[in-house]
Image (cartoon, rainbow, N blue to C red; front, side, top):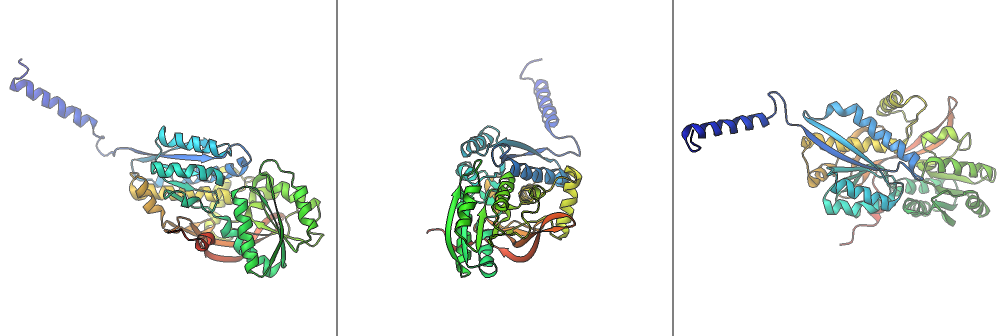
Length: 405
């Protein structure tokens, strides 16, 4: 048979048609879309304990809601350890973007790490959903950053205002010497002064393996009415509470107040009765009597056991994965950075365990209730009981510091 004969041409056309048909999905099936989610988290270093909580929140949401993804769409989760180090975080994020070709980034415990990663998201136009890092200016580094966690200004400003009215007029400030500590210091000072109080002194301590006793003693020697403290959660919170108790601040008549970082729910069993009476401000407590929180706690206990306790780090991870899932559902798994950010800007979840949340479309930062809580014993357990609710709090720093034109 000649190559250019009608019969030969018909055979070639038939072979091409068969090959094209074979490449199509089977009848009744859809082509599979895989969305790659790159997670940058602190699995080692001084933020490893809260990083574990955050990861458990992400993993639990993904497991419970996998069936809600559109037909033919699945996720691939790639986890990387930043070692609580900004340079490492930047490197692993770059690898996730360039080598692994992730569609979206999620996570980040430390603010210096998030600040190092943010410029990469602008260059690659890959969204980053921050589930913890609270550094107030991070979303301004890149238009491809949205935050579902909190800022220290959201919690510390209302706490400062409350403390000036309810706890005393002279305050001392002691914070960890990195971005969120600096934010907490400035925010509490703003709220306390606006409430009519005076800051009588301040001190900063190192982030790695600090001995808190000398710093707490220095604060005690200043004889303030109020001592505001910020530490980055985890085991450092327990060590700080021990120093507060050992140095007898309560007996000295000094009222200690803090953000939620000092009394994360999962650390409370390790603190004895030291936190009893301590007032903090935060966006979540396991003690909250909300239906969505009860459902969350039941699912957590079933997955991780009754002895495992979630905290605000865990809820940040849960809500961050919820935001990513909503992007996937609304785009059927096919989105670029701009499409994802269009959804994230203005994203809402009325049923978060912490209460209703949303992302401000202008600042790309979280809007949420802030609760003033008191640590107390209930049914033999130490809990953070919410007793004041400040609804729909935007980040105050951004309102006080509008972008320069």
